Amino acid sequence: METLLIVIFVVGYLAITLEHNLKIDKLIPALAMMAVLWALMAFGIDTFTTWFDSGKHALMENFAAFGHEEKMHILEETLLHHLGKTSEILVFLLGAMTIVEIIDYFDGFATIKTFVKTKSKKRILWIFAFLAFILSAIIDNLTATIVLISILQKIVKERNVRIWYAGLIIIAANAGGAWSPIGDVTTTMLWIGRKVSTAMLIEHLLIPSLVCMLIPTFIATFLPAFKGTIEQEETPPSKSKFGPTMLYLGLSAIVFVPIFKTITHLPPYVGMMLSLAVVATFAEIYSSAKFSISSVGGEGHDTTGHHSPLHSALTKIELPSILFFLGILMAVAALESLGMLFNFAEGLKQGMPLLGTEMAGTQISDLVVLLLGIGSAVIDNVPLVAASLGMFSEPMDDQLWHFIAYSAGTGGSMLIIGSAAGVVAMGMEKIDFFWYLKKIGWLAFIGFIAGAICYMAMRYLF
Image (cartoon, rainbow, N blue to C red):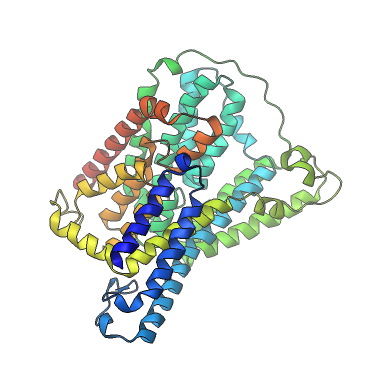
């Protein structure tokens, strides 16, 4: 039965990875894989001899001797436990996405365009690289990429030049998301899973992530695509006078979430819901005023009546992404529950060479974590990190978790399908897979390795 479950997981995983070739949205195989795995586990519960207790992070004793009813009760309790942990992540993401959409409702992101006052291609590259690095740490790398490419389309009209900028934005956004607990889904998973804390994550990964962004951007300034100047059109006025206010309010509300968690010790989604309530309150007050935003949200907005920004935002959030995370995280949880990931980790610890792990206090080698980062370019980094959560039992803020956060967050930049930021940029600009591999992939690889070396050097020096 275990072999069948692994086969189903591998097939589902391949379907997710090859979604562009199969032309099937990745959420479909993710949801199907989750449901089939747990159904087969329920049918074959009596054949399993081991079960993993996530609370104690150890195999359950004498599981094989339990009766059918007792085993089914354990399965249901385990399913409920994992659903609760997964829901924490999903509710958190829903809140963050809704705040971002409320900002967009007021055309708040148009404020960022006012920062670009130069015609130099090199300077524009540096401006967008730093904007992507900082913005992705606040509103996550996926949203930052969408916002910045949307602005880029209004500044750089020539597509052949614009896709070069888009490639560097992907690298910078993924680097920026790695050092923030709310910058990338994988770091959010580690943060909510109590593997990393906000202060220690920033302390250990800010400089390596910055190096990961700076090196490729510096090299890119010498490429022909970034030489010369561009012609810019006049910037149209913002569609709402409340745009800048909502931008700063929304970003501040998201940044407040880690502070709320530190003060109250409550799960992050509680703070995100409070932030959403505050932002939505101001949005409702501002939308009661009669200002023209009819072209922002389509026919649903009118300038004489009151239209709820919150309702509008909720209709635009990426529910397919939420459902995909549900499917893949619960599918990985199924393998974890049977002890497969735990046993695999034990095998790694015994079989892999120890490369500089004394200071990290862990038996996993740096080589394994680097391979995980490279693997995240080929395979989605969400299930890789989800698997690592079930594989390793190192304590909170162990060096292992910080290195995993860096590798999984930045390694996906090497292929355009290796990160959410890359996939959305691919869709927005119709970037060819092999063009990105040839033109941008090597820059991302250099940045990834440079940041990793910086991280390991800092670990030994400090």
